[in-house]
Length: 560
Image (cartoon, rainbow, N blue to C red; front, side):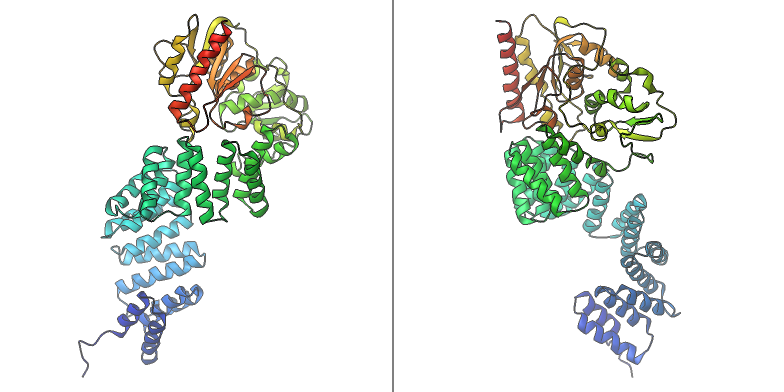
């Protein structure tokens, strides 16, 4: 007589499998199949073993046999379809995998594993929104949802939905407050959302709790860089690279910090090593980073060539072919990229480009081309219309084969004349720029300028300004050009206003962050620029306070 309380051999075999005891699991499944050839649960077990051993094609074949059996309950059939979906996903059969997971969800809608598998298939198919919905359903079905919420947060972060990612990671940390990995994920998301102070605290806590990994230290180093703690950032990123010496992404980040703190030769060597050793995105990033060193030093032949590496990082802008600098009468579209200051800086090259081709200007500051007195305006066509090719403003030096330093003479002209004592001020850039905190001057530091008598200070940026400054209309870039044209002096951080002052030939006092951008290094792009920089290693407010006091002293010396 059968003992009704004897253990189920199939369950025993699956229990061995779940514990990682594959040998006993296989023995159990084979014993069942010897007694009952074609037993579907044992076939499923053998399929799980095959997939665990990297034999996904065998797993698919075994599951096909198991699912042909009629005497399989809906719950067991759902489980088999989930395993089938995973095996198909392993093999790259994405749509078939999605279909298998969909069957599993229909058969057993309360199985979180079916929804999780479906989400991974949808991610592979590029249907990331649907994937997030599937993961959300899985979290509703789990008692411990932390792992799924972590995956959901990763998807949000990868898709640029930073606040949603932060929300998911916060929930994981709430459930696992002493989990270093969970804190590291939250810290990375906070960094992506520019919440640098909280990100630093969270990442330091993650390290204390055992998550001092290369990834966590990389995030912490970038946070320290954004906070202006460059020496600390350098040390942190070195530790990260020591933990993962082959990580080109960390090496590129370290090289960027080395540039900022003036260790140029070391940074260049690091970028050269990455470019020689790696391929793909990080190699292109290293070439681009090195190009900024070369351009800052005036090594233009190599610099403009490697500067084109940024095109691989930005991706294709349109389907139009790239202009190669050849002459002809078929029009070329000129497009913009990066910031408005970049556009104004590189507009100077339109004059030479227009001698080779008629141009259609398709960038945000294109209206300023009408202020270029040396540009043949008859060669500038309406923006819309057919073109033979296109080129980015920032690629013009490369395709034009320029190897000499740029001319420093003004190339924009307005009717307004400088007014004695009128000083234009711009103290902040675009706050969405990740490292704007280092570039922009805290408004409280500007109070030092009130010591200066006999001057009119005009705010050359939109938004709120101290009450002691004059406000002017700045609706368009033309408005800005006119207001800058009326200034006897412009004092600005590294942003559009600084480039506008240089292009118009107005004296510029540049409030440049520690390290600073390649455009303000050894090569002069404009004729009358004086730079003021915070002391190395100073905090943001402390450093800018020193700078503004130096500006006050410079005014005092001018008056003597």
